[in-house]
Length: 390
Ligand code: PLP
Image 1 (cartoon, helix red, strand yellow):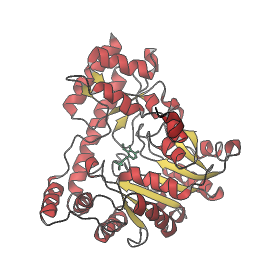
Image 2: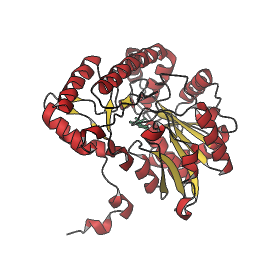
Image 3: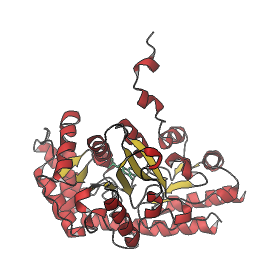
């Protein structure tokens, strides 16, 4: 008998399974459950993207691409970032096509970190940051971005964690608008964070996968702040704003030295991002911007509906500025996050994610995705109100 605990990587053995997946394994076993759980658009990928992709298969696009991805796609992304944010990247040297933002995160940590290097990141946060930092040999240094600060990351909170405990902080990871809270970071605070990044010589990795889903004001990529482009790696993707989760395409834009190092890892571990996904992504940028905007406008309506619904039933709910999540406060019910989610599922067959899936600081909250039809949201809200009221 092999003793696998002796054989498997000790880092992997210390990783906890994703709280979201664990919960949804239970949900998958239930019939007629209304799910506000998954962070995935209910929209189908725009038809023009599907049609072009089918044609591309017929035309024989079934082979590898170059390691960095199609140059035509990188050029299209460069044009897109220039047009949307007046950010300019050289498509030949400063853009890498990745397998979703997920792979961009992984490559960034592996390219940057030496054993023991610290990475500052906001919490509550998307489930992959802490494990990916650990897998790359780094030390996660969480900075709280909690309800007291409208879930927004503050420069002063980063300051209090930078180099804490003798860990040398090398990078600052940002995610705004945020999963799971939908919070963004205001322009003044971004400027304070930029000053700190400069003072502390931090490389900034900015996961802006929800940038296009900003409802209150224009999204401000971190790389657009004065002096920040050279020290920022911008991670963007197609999964959310273009309803393309299954196509698995993202992009990383940054200094050519960093992109070159990430490409080195990518060429050995992945070869290239999926060819069909790359064709789909290029089509989306050329022909599906209006569809993207229509979906964003629908999410905004759903956001208003769900925030009002929670506040009306007495669960205080922060108004998110972007993404497609709300993070209502359930502390007034006297239940913890896991109890609330489990009992709600049992009693009303409605699935939400316990806030603790996004870190300990998510205790007392639940995450609800509104990437679900308004009818479903309305039905879920009345069931949650019955649960809370009863
Ligand atoms: N970053 C954040 C904040 C996310 O919420 C997600 C998915 O939920 C990802 C990255 C992964 O995205 P992708 O599908 O591009 O790998």
